Image: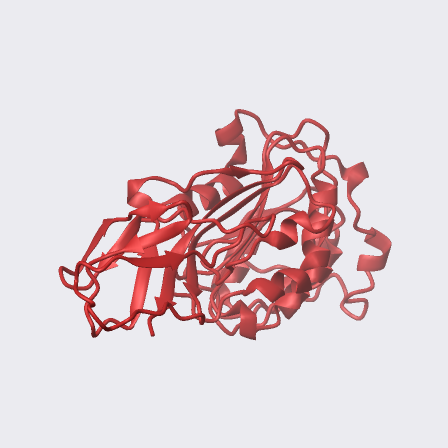
Length: 339
């Protein structure tokens, strides 16, 4: 539910904060003269070829083209900044992004780019696009060409803008088995830093990294980013360090200590989970904690994993605040192997 809230917030930020994000064409970083060379061999009358009809319709609607056929001239002479919303509320997962490369020729860039993409689909067509708000949702980014995102450019947002967010998320909550991992955050440093620089004057700016596999958020306190909210729920967190259990005298009432292996922005251990899986009853029980260590009971000798999670129906994860103004909200399904 929180993931949907943030997606809706990206599309309708003005409804959330009570005001719209003003666009200042003079502050756009895109170089119109340079972008016009992207398809220099294409005359204005040539039609743009899209790989997914649903994407073509979304772009045509965003540009007010009723015929649905988009020409290079339509793009080169477009006066505003289109809001392109191909997210779950509007279309199924996109099967191709082919055709979006033509939007490099928009004179004023894109106000909102929201793409819900099928796993394995190349992100290459969005290389170099200029945007204000961004939502990329795709399972399996870790094994895909996600570093294309580093080529995106961002409009400098006007001082006093109330809300903006950059979302790089998976599609499948708690089960994105090839989602972004900790090291991928470092690989995406150009994206994060560029987006942050363009939004330094935004009152409520943040990154949404839900439905990935991230367990360590120290990247966000290791560089220039500050006064930024990082929101990451429904993470699929599988650990390799085993929880050792002595079989001698073990019963279902034995209390097993499970130190958290999730790390916050300062590299500190954090545990925001609220429930632990009970294999005997096939239910989520209330979690017991000692600091950030989970006290697990009810295990049986055949269990292979200790599973804890934040059941979002029980409330959103607590906000952890840091000295540089950053804040973190993180929750996921954590799998600790048993030895």
